[in-house]
Length: 228
Image 1 (cartoon, rainbow, N blue to C red):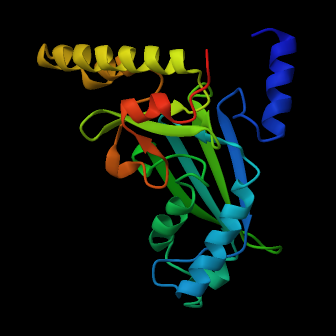
Image 2: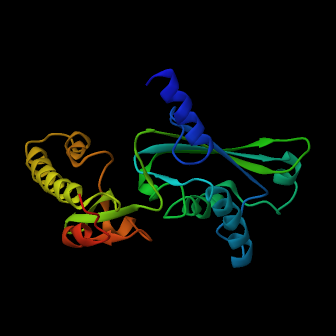
Image 3: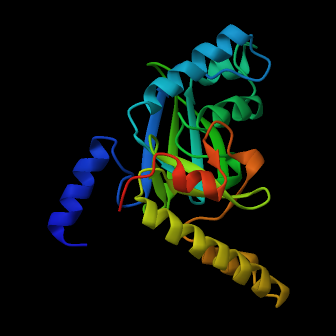
């Protein structure tokens, strides 16, 4: 990547149009986190904060990623009151808020590593800091991202704005890749190496694509197809 291309990529990342080119993204959410035991209103209010911040990002990460969460909170409130949620009870609702069409990634199956801790602050507002690391080339545009089923419940992400000829070529390539992947697995080639034949990131099970459009190959070719 040239200096000019890097500068342009950074500018687009600052606008939320694509992931940062260095594969790292930090997000801060002000306030104390909700837990699984919190009331529905409390959880919805906190998750709404996360969704509001994520609305500035126009992309979804499609590859593996790691996440470090740091809760900045006064130690006294952690040790001397029962007002703060247990750290392990905060994880599930928080991660769910980051997934799906309005989130930052597709499903928590993408999380390769997850670490959470709290740190004492003397003053100031509580906050949770989220530090993501990922492959910066594995992403899709939120508005155009969908999935096609290539093998029963197996799905691959696609861009709905591709011209029709590109959709046909992609489906043919994915079908051939799936056949080769299955053959290589029977020859004891590792899953991750074989899955690379399906292009970009790993495939997703249908149950992990909640909220995203899912098409059969035939429907994908016809849905909003542009002339080549």
